Structures are given as C-alpha cells and as structure tokens.
Image 1 (cartoon, rainbow, N blue to C red):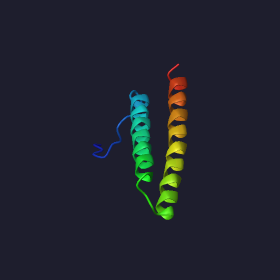
Image 2: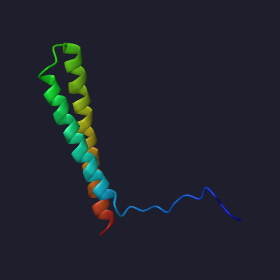
Image 3: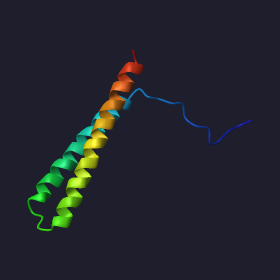
Length: 75
C-alpha cells in the first residue's frame, strides 16, 4: 500500500541551530521595539510594547531551555 501523506522522519539534527536563530531574531525584535519606545507618546502603546517584550523574554528563556534539552539528548 502506498501512503502519499506519509510523515517525514523526525530530524532534530539542526534544532539547536534553528533555536539559536530564533533567539537572535527575537532579540533583534526586542531591540527594535525598545527603540520605538523612544518615539511613542501613548502610554497604552508603551505598555503594549513592554508587555510584548516581556513575552519575548519568556520565549528566549524557553528557547534556551530547549537548547539545553537538545544538548542532553545528543550525549
């Protein structure tokens, strides 16, 4: 029997690289958001930007935790 929608095998060989790239891009976005705070007069926008950067920091922590998990798996 032929399965046209057969899932691809789980390839984690480049997960750490992808996670590091995601961290890098998230940090760039945080820095851009921090820069935009300089030009924001609205307190509501300021709070939204700060809240989003808080979520980004949490994401970075999660990415770093995943990198550690991947490093432990490859041992």
